[in-house]
Length: 362
Ligand code: GLY
Image (cartoon, rainbow, N blue to C red):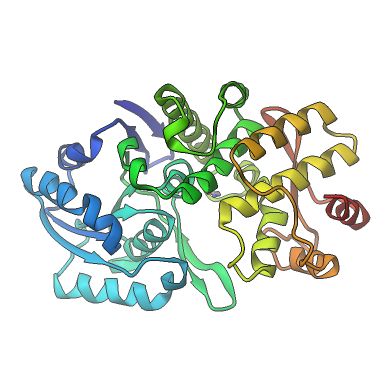
């Protein structure tokens, strides 16, 4: 088992990665000295595949398990769903020492984390991510929350999990489009943090489908991405500085997602488009080489991710949408721009005409 520590004062925790680790969930949680009551939250599809195995492992370790399935999909990432979890928590008398276990992708993880952050002012949460994106990104680092009708993730809290348990075997049931979307975040870590990961991705013929990727590379992808996220979050839990680099590709990515009403692209696909644009902006500003931006774009294409802002997106609307981003500070749009493979810088000095030029030529 590979164990990566997220080192945050008073709330450090482990990311445990191993094929078949789902069966060890109960044993892993026993070490954490948590109360007996567990509320396992999933969605019907994921529960059908993995729910009973998770429950059996927990019960064998002496936990008393209640489970609840929320409907699948981003459109249920709402306060209504959280209310449902509070009702179940109340009915079953969840206590301060109790634990919510999130078994699912980013939506389940974010909602369960938020319910755990707020129930009784905060109870334990354990994350068992089942999508690539959740494994390498959203399950780690404590960002939890739900959407407001006017915008994604506007309601939330930082609440670190007690454990993140990753079983790569569950990726087998992940739809290919979801796998590719997760790969965008993996490529992101290669560009912003980890040259070794980047070159390993370059060496692989395929990045678009799990079945074509060697299991060694899957190990590398998971361990290096989780280590990158753990390193960053350990240094800056609440995004007062360094953590902002994780938003590479997200500035234009979020604007494209919102202008296409979250229907045209998965989050990871929009991040792919955003990384290509950010790379080109860095080239225009003389910060990054043409060669490296091409290397990045080759990986994005190899993962079969989109690379262009669609023509249907109006450029003036895109510029306006950038202003609405959560990352805007004193009216200035913040960009994360690469300066080398494995290195980025954060700037709010990107001239609007450079953004327009890059989008027009994309
Ligand atoms: N997904 C970006 C972060 O966790 O900060």
